[in-house]
Image (cartoon, rainbow, N blue to C red):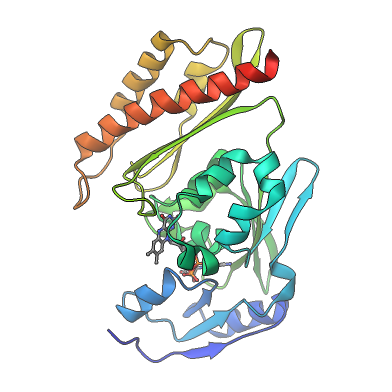
Length: 291
Ligand code: FAD
């Protein structure tokens, strides 16, 4: 397929990019890595009148750490996220997640923020933004706005940005040294989108789970942060009986889709199996830090 005609602009500042988007009257699209947008344009699933390329804005390519939070600018590539030593040390669960994302060529161009904006329910970065209490900074000619990741994902490939807003950065939590984590994903081939995935973190206080987080992807219209599972785990020892309770809760709660890749029942079954592994690994990692 060939794309419908469009104009292309490459501003070099954040304010110039906001002005370009405002000028398009809601019909423009940001291009970051282009790894998801260009196929959609080629198939004419989207037909923007203008592409606003943010890759010429130097300020957007940084990864910065401050006060226990990490900020990823809008042109930080998957490759940078996957190889950044700070991320490997302070957010090892994100480091692990990045190795499940696509292939080297896609990772060289695709961006963390672009993936979150694209809001694919089977993509790793939207789920990691939810798990790590992501805060999204959106910019338009009206100024800057903060959006919690919990309020950002509106449906499959739908986010809560206004048509003239774009994301300049996303902030996520770093993990303290006593946090154990588990990341378990199942895809048919390495680098494919996941059929299901569980990411969980926890510490141990007085022999019980503390500050538990639990997120999933591939099993709903959006990535999921499951507060009901977190509440079930909190303050308890992660034993096989507790894990059985979590699996039962997931069976009752999750409403995955049936599609070409897997049935809803298979995805529900996978969710339980992945949750068992992820919780067990997270608990053991957390236990090692209190030994
Ligand atoms: P683009 O393609 O440039 O944009 C995607 C959408 O987000 C567009 O609507 C665009 O307008 C919008 N957008 C981008 N940046 C911004 C911004 N700063 N502000 C507002 N809107 C913005 N992803 C995974 O997570 N896991 C995988 O396993 C995986 N496998 C893949 C395999 C293949 C073969 C391909 C082609 C892609 C795969 N992807 C996977 C998707 C890949 O990670 C994309 O790079 C990512 O989804 C989009 O990032 P991007 O920077 O390329 O965004």
